[in-house]
Length: 64
Image (cartoon, rainbow, N blue to C red; front, side):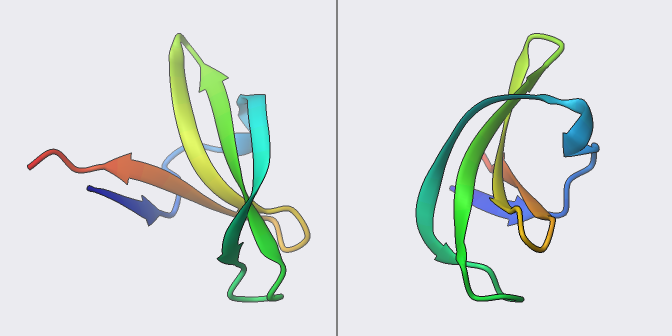
């Protein structure tokens, strides 16, 4: 199961690998957010991003 949290790292320091529009809307402006994948130090990091509001939510996968 996955959930989204406030990032522990600064996404602006990561390399953007891919980006696609999602059906999830920003809670602040109401525009669709984007699914993004960033890369750093041989690891990928998934985010939901609203580029207008500069909101970043990092996806965390919980293993049960």
